[in-house]
Each structure stands twice: as structure tokens, then as C-alpha cells.
Amino acid sequence: MNDKQDQMLRFWSDRAATHGADPRANTNDVHLRSLEISYVDQAIKDADPSSILDFGCANGFSTHRLASTHPNRSFLGIDLNRDMIQVASMGHDTRPPENLAFQCQDIEAEPIATSFDFIYCIRVLQNMPSMDAQKGAIDALCEALHPGGTLVTIESYAEGYSILNQDREALGLSPLPIHPHLTLLTPELDEHTGTMLNQVRQDSLSSSYYLITRLVYSSLATQAGEAIDYDHPLHKLAAQVPQVGTYGPQLATIYRK
Ligand SMILES: C[S@@+](CC[C@H](N)C(=O)[O-])C[C@H]1O[C@@H](n2cnc3c(N)ncnc32)[C@H](O)[C@@H]1O
Image (cartoon, rainbow, N blue to C red; front, side):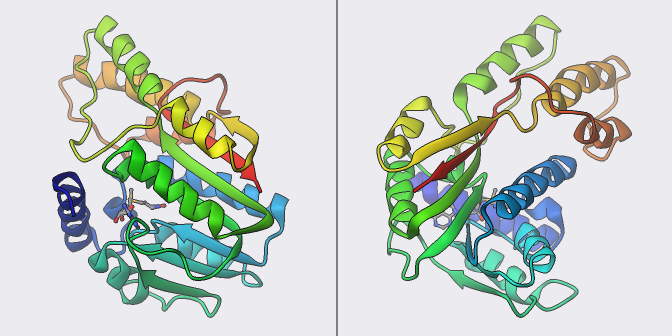
């Protein structure tokens, strides 16, 4: 295990210990979560798969919700972090539904044993130590996908981050910090994935959300001398308005094999 992966592992173990089954274990940005889960939910409805893999499921917050919404489809959540998998399996108020199982696995170290109709990953590739590791993960996911199957990735890209930070600077705001264990995505990874899968669409699923929360709300909070509150009504509203344009670091991509 290299230093960056070790740092990442400790980061998520600390979050599992502090937050347990709470959605904050996976990100402080809880309203962004609702946009991500809705996006995957719609993609599942469109593709109508029987078997689904949540790669990098963390504490299983989204897996529990999606598996409960789709009781006739089977779900497997895998994650490298034992502490997260323990919370995912035993730490929620209700036991995982019948159609959901969890497994501790490092995709960099061992191939995925089963095949799936549908695979999704939310903020996982960006948690890998290098682009080579991201490419290796994509190769393993493609391998585990049935012909005609669907892969959905929801990840942060370096270019969108840099534009956002330039705009923050123009407003007198400090740049958004990036955790040292992260490797933001670049178009090169999309090109790599495109050699094995057909890209069906790519969406800026949180465009208005980033504009409102990271520019408008951040400016208002800074002017008022207030700390950033991810539960502020403006965050909730930003997740409810139409997501127009192509702003912010996050891109959701749907591929078909
Ligand atoms: C931001 S969390 C994922 C959040 C989750 N997908 C959700 O919807 O809330 C990133 C997760 O990726 C997992 N991860 C990173 N590298 C991995 C690998 N090589 N194999 C499996 N899981 C990995 C981490 O352990 C961490 O729990």
C-alpha cells in the first residue's frame, strides 16, 4: 500500500468512527448526496438491471437507500475500508434489506469475482492514488460488466475545480482545499474508458448546486463572518432547483458495454 492510499484509508476510517451510518461519513455535503442518489436511481430505472454493484460504497448510505427503492434487484456494495464495511453491514438502524450484501475488497489488489448488469461509483475514482490506479479500476469494472451492461461514474474533475477556484478568487474567496489523498479526474481517464465502453452521456449533475453554494452562499457567509454550514437552507434549495449549465467539478457519466 502506498502513502497516498494509506492516508486515504485513515481518512475514511476516521470518518466511519466519527459519523457511523450518518451520510456525513461519506461527505459533509449532505444535500449534494441527494442529487447523486437521484441520478443513479434514474439511471437504474432507465437500464432496468437485475444485478447492481456499488463500487466504493463506504458506509452504504446510498446502497441501503437504492436497494430499498429497488427490492427486486440484487445489490452488492464493495469497499476497501473494513471500518466502512462494518458500518454498512451492521451499523444502520435497520439491517440491510434481503437484496443487499456488502464485501470488503480492494479493487486494486483483487479482481471482482462476479459479473453485474449495472455498476456505479460515487466519488471513488477520485479517492484513488493515481491515474494509473483509476485506469486499473476502470479495467476491472469493465471486466465485471455483462455485455450491454451500464457503468455510471460520479466524480470530480480537475478542470472544473480550477475554474471554480478562479471564480472564487475573483470574488475574494479562498480556494476550496483539496484533500492530499485525492486525484481529481482528467479527460484522459474518460478516453481510456471510451476504448472499452460507449459513452452514452455526460451530465453536470450539480451545476446550479456548485454555483449557488460555492459562490453565492460562500460569499454571503464570508461577508457575514459566518462559518460554512452544509445544512443551510440555501444548500437544500440549491439541490432542488434545476441543474442548468456545466458548472462545478462534478460530472456524471453513463457508459454502456
Ligand atoms: C467518498 S467515499 C465513497 C462514497 C460513497 N460511494 C457514497 O455514495 O456515499 C470513497 C470510498 O472509496 C473507497 N475506495 C477507495 N479506493 C478503493 C479501492 N481500491 N477499492 C475499493 N474501495 C476503494 C474508500 O475506501 C472510500 O470508502
